[in-house]
Length: 482
Image 1 (cartoon, rainbow, N blue to C red):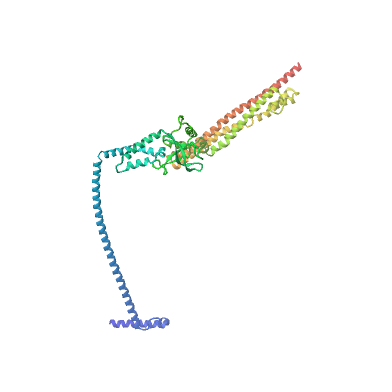
Image 2: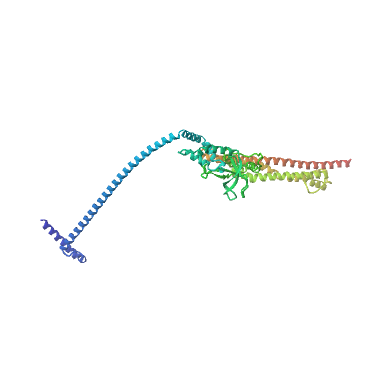
């Protein structure tokens, strides 16, 4: 039945093939021409697939064998490594035991010398503050290598020599001697010269505390203080360099240092000493001068007071004082000579008198009063401006105070009140502007008072002379009537 079923299936396939050939003649030319050809093609495809499967199977078996071989080699290497590890462990244990024996032998043979070494290391540990002090000492530029030697000895595990043991007291003695010396030496100083470069300059050392340039090098002025700092920026590093202070201390320290530079061998002079080896001079350099405080910390309000109120008010006040003084001298000279003219107010009063001396007393008095009234504004000119500036200056300073407090409270709102430096800027503006307002107001008030007093004095001279002229005229008329 299977055979009959197969032939029936093949017959159906053939019928389908014939129908396909009838529908598409072009395809019939490319396909098998008979059932035998179809069967042969099927057998050929089946054989090809069987051969490919067999090839894949052989490749898989080959790779499996290779992987087994690699695994076996890895196991052999692991076993060899474990054996080598056991050998090294045994060798390490033997070396440790040998090291213990040698250490015991060393301690037995060293005897009292080992105790001396322990005492040396204890002394070295107790003198570490001195060693750190030596590291930041200016004497290192003359006594080189001692810090490195001490560090190596204190950290060495071997027995030191006699020279190594002597290095500690010798270094301390050298430092003690250096503290009493005032001598010059040459060192490479950074940030110095006209172009802020590094150059070898001559320095004057005061003990081990501070040093300054002597001015013996071209382009380097004397009295510039330097500090010892490591290239990494820490003072505990063994390799040190000299750096010029970016901001030098006040001029009095520099002048005293220059006196020491110029002093003779047996001359005693007063010189500055920084026991902190540069820290105090650095702080003094960072302290702003009064000029920096008034100009920078005062802000724009302070600059208004400095550039507008103070110069204008002071110049006007001084101008009025000088002009009133000259006017007063001229009027006093005219009062003695009674010469009429245009040179000063009193001369113009006399000129008015000469022009109206034939008038009656009342008319003459009115004419003189009119002339005095015309001269009064000239005498008191600019006095009111000085007065106004003296009154405005404290108000502008108060404005700066309010602005400074606003800045302070803004900083507190943003950053909190934990860091005083954040609030220092606003407080500085508030205080400096208050100071500037007072500095402007006080001299302006004094200048206005002096100018006003001098103006009243000149005005009084005019009144006295006019009254004298009217009295003389009235007295002359009375004698004429008599």
